[in-house]
Image 1: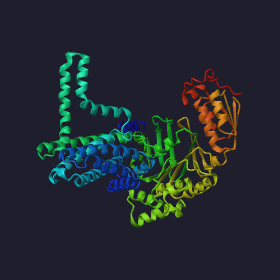
Image 2: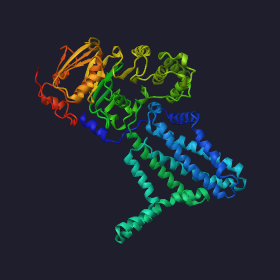
Image 3: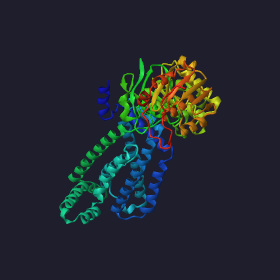
Image 4: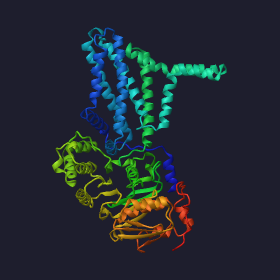
Length: 266
Length: 320
């Protein structure tokens, strides 16, 4: 008995299948309905109107316009995901977790809901810019290509943000994830500083890190570039596939951490 | 048959350190303990919300995390969205269980009837009183007709007449083929509901009383101990008017299990040795039997470092 219990506890935290296959879809609908009825959505939609009115009015440059859309969408993705993660931790919402049983389904439902809200904001901001900045309108082909890349980028940002919320990760895990994100991005500053500190003997290691981080960052930077200057080619498809694999990896890690998480209704 | 079996449950960062529990099917089990004794943590764990601890909890022979759809949970901490109507709240919850059409209506009608909230159906949550919200949340917990109903402090914050109505509602849920677990501080007469009461103190279920023992529980209890440390003594005499205490004797009057649980929590926390509980036939005499020798006492309740208690060392147990 004792041995059995020890063996069970040594295994990774287990997850149950959802009570019904349709549960996750139902939960997404409920999350969105709650979000709309609580009028939280007004912040996102209101910001879309504000951004369109302030930054895009009478714009004449298509790429500037698309850059503004993408930056706005990334910021909305960060905000919306953090709000939804906060909601997901409320005892009332956790009653829904009891109902659908599966923690994976629960967390994925919130992820999908976040993406739907962010994309609704993107659609609003694009529609408004078509009205208020007629000279900068991109063609539908450009818009379509950009949109595909943007969906991937938004999914990446929402999954990463969800991973960084207290709902999923504890503080050690969050520091680890944040380090792994900020190190490559800040290596241009960190690298020379470290080299200055440890002396020229280790410069080849610093250079190796610089190359490694450059390679790691390249797909993401290319993805962002493709959103602003859309160009459909094999590289774009490769970059998208690469990011989809990363997203699936992050979701898997989120599920593992969330399965271990202690939640509170009472 | 046991509906719930908890084996050596220890929840990190909580008072719960070694809970073993067997709750028979279709019974009403009360968890009574002082504030901070870990009642809510235990309920959360039984609901499978402590991910890593789930294998220690079996529900009908299965790990609890695979059976959470059969669990209904109600807690004063649950605050439903204020913009929804009661009907909408209940139906959306029912839809998550895959209920629809006539089945959903049947479940809805039953939950509403059992919780006596028929007249509230079309009101929004924001218009309801605390008592109404508590009943609505009980209905939400019951909407799928769960086989296990977990209730945390059902009467907390309610007026006395509302508490009586809530007790009536809970009483009516007994005998409906559900296992009910209620965590309470014991400050209202919920004891009549329970088939068994587990007293939670020091991170463990220190004693279990059955219905017969609960009914015949003497209302005046005298506990003889060795010297009670000052901090423990000050806490004991301030938290309830029904307690008279000297440094070696505590008398509890007319408070049922609540005060006893709270006093025991404090005594165990400070490693105070209990020599005798009067009347002699009190169900908690087990505690005295368990701690006949200092060695056993140390094994049962490992000493803790209490820096504020200089000079309050544990005296050898000598019968007065």
